[in-house]
Image (tube, rainbow over all chains, first blue to last red; front, side, top):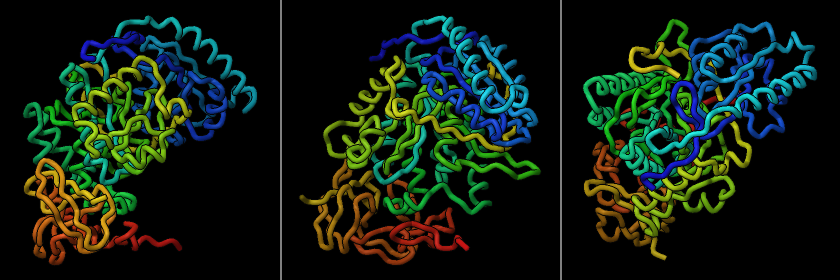
Length: 400
Length: 110
């Protein structure tokens, strides 16, 4: 298992992908229907888009990080023709990353039906060119895995998240990269987290991210705990936080990254998706699970592990989502949707370590091309909205 | 089948039920810090917490070896610990929720 390898796709920035997908990117809600119709019936083509007409630097950084993700081999950007966000500039930036890219406006191609036809032709050309991506051997040290939890119940903190945490420890020990997020689900745990910092810089980053998340929750009077969590037996945000942080395992935290910023070196990283204060005071943090998953993919995650005690049916574009539950009953009820039953550690049929190694094998098979349940079902949910985050540091390493 | 609950850390004063427990059910405490048997004083659903010992009002509720909230009134051993007798030390809204569904009462739909 430790020296497992699989075939990946080499990108010009040196990163490797586990899929070679085409991505349609729309630049305003008005282009959403055409974009989805262009991708319809094309199993290798996923769609993302930004609904707003007025552009937003955060959203553009996010769209570009997704369009230049290692799992993406080619990009088609589609706009209506009067919005601020420019499809041609997205295509230019993607071409600079060594990938084929095209762009057009619906208003310049005669409306819905001609635009869908034009888009399909461009897609066929992009598919031919993206097939030229070099195929190379890839292993754990080049893999980036994200973790997110949603629809949590008591099993998430007892089984689902601890199994993912143990797998993260193992992945980091193999030289791989692990990213966890949801700083608003770390409320009450400031010292536990900052004591895990790899160095003083990371400690300061963790404390700043924690303080921002706590201030945010206090200001909006909304903590990241939902009616379903309470009904499932969780009583306070502190209790949910302890269960949520378990998915981050026990290794040192190398630092905090913001949305659209990849980790600068292997190891365990914390992703901060909370808006930074700005004069407009807009942007909501963790509005739903899909936003967090998209943020992890934008950080370069090849695969995202999604832990759901109560059971969720979502998937993701670009990077496969592997759904894990710690609740054996949920696994039985929703076995068509859920990939992995971590409930085995609660009935005594597996140890945490055995379950983590079984999960590692599933991650390996997914990296090698085996479709996950949400992938096979065609779930491709995405969520990109207005937000403000201060521009991430560009001083160390390169941004995707 | 005897219901079971998990005690995660030795210093925890609550445990999480793996099965539904009826009133007066003897619940087996399992986990690395297992302590034997505690009798449920009321029906408690799987996933919810029961007190392993008597807790005074204002005392911390401890799970994972860490304070997850504080008792808002005295809690007997075997009692259900949830929104009606435990509040967050961070989230001041945690006491305004429906005990069964967790739904917030203050949001208006008009």
